[in-house]
Length: 134
Ligand code: CMX
Image 1 (cartoon, rainbow, N blue to C red):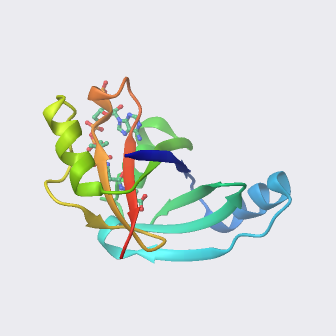
Image 2: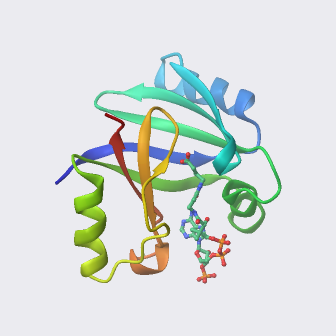
């Protein structure tokens, strides 16, 4: 089951500078900074009610965020949906014709298992499914 919008991911060039902007905007401090080597990103999270904002800076040139900054500049990168059973949701969505970017869930930031859907099957929006690691 899809439960809620877990977070919005925002691609940024400079994590430190963007943290200052979003901490001022939301009037709250970030609760976590985490580097995810496998995705080539440094991330920072801010809580916003039941949802979160994730700021993402590339840590290498092949990172999806580095490509995003070159082609699309800074801005909203993905929308993440919390699910209670990621394997079941991946199966359900694949059967409906959505293109999953990975055959199995990956380890993502903030203690999650994640799977992305290609934006070409979701009206140009990169969608991430995420579930708390058990
Ligand atoms: N949102 C919407 N559309 C996007 C996009 C994004 N974030 N990134 C790329 N696209 C579009 C491109 O504009 C392009 O559209 P057109 O064909 O109309 O030009 C299309 O998707 C393919 O883009 P591409 O540049 O040819 O392909 P990329 O090599 O950039 O790959 C994508 C795009 C989505 C498959 C890749 O970025 C990916 O696998 N993303 C998932 C992993 C990820 O984003 N990791 C970083 C975050 C990790 C985390 O949250 O912890």
